[in-house]
Image 1 (cartoon, helix red, strand yellow):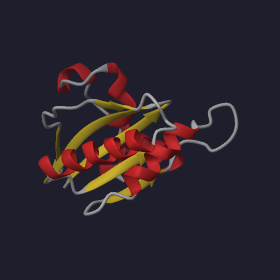
Image 2 (spheres, one colour):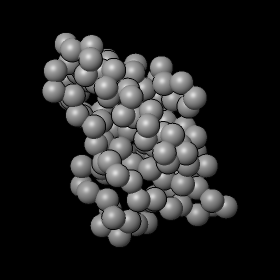
Image 3 (cartoon, one colour):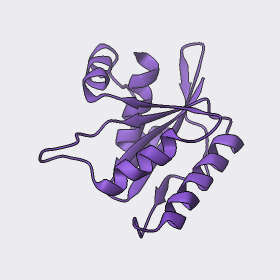
Length: 140
C-alpha cells in the first residue's frame, strides 16, 4: 500500500510518501516535498492546490492520503488556511483521505518506535511529522 501523509502547518502542506510491502517500508522518491498557498482568500489558489495534489496522486499511484489531525481550538489550533487545504484533499476524486488522530498516532508509535533517522531515508527536517504520521498509520 502506498500512502501520502500530510502535515498541515499554517499555509503549507508538508508531505511524505511511504510504501508498505510485506511489512517493509520504503520511502519512494517524490518530485514535491511541500505545497504552499500564498493567498488563502483566492479560490483559484485552492483549486490549483487541489489540482497539483490530484496530479501527484495520479502520477505516484497513491492509494490513500493520511492527514495529521490538528486541534480545532486552543493554543495549538490549526489555521483556517490549513482547514481549507484539508477539505480540498478530502474532496479529491479517486483517492480516499483520512484524518489520523494524535492519540492513535502516539499509541502506534509507542508500540512500534521508529528506528530510522530522516537523513537515512532522504527526508528533510520539515517532513518529520508527515513521516511519523505515515509510519504510525501503516503500523496501526
